[in-house]
Image (cartoon, rainbow, N blue to C red):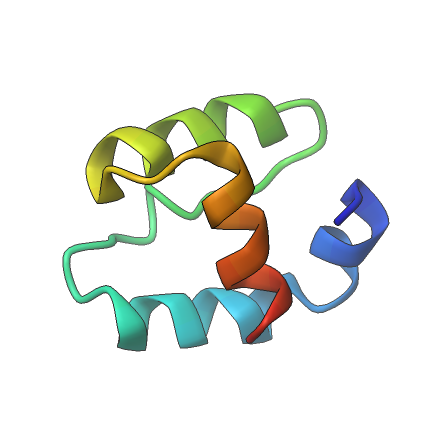
Length: 61
């Protein structure tokens, strides 16, 4: 998964992630240019998943 994939349909993916993981907030899923690594780090901590696991979850949405 690359940044273009994330940017392209992030709002749709964000909604699906919030449905799958109720503990996620809008702040957790804030994706802005240059903050991808920070956002992924927050998600790793909150969900207890590796970066690879997160990429897989997001790509399967």
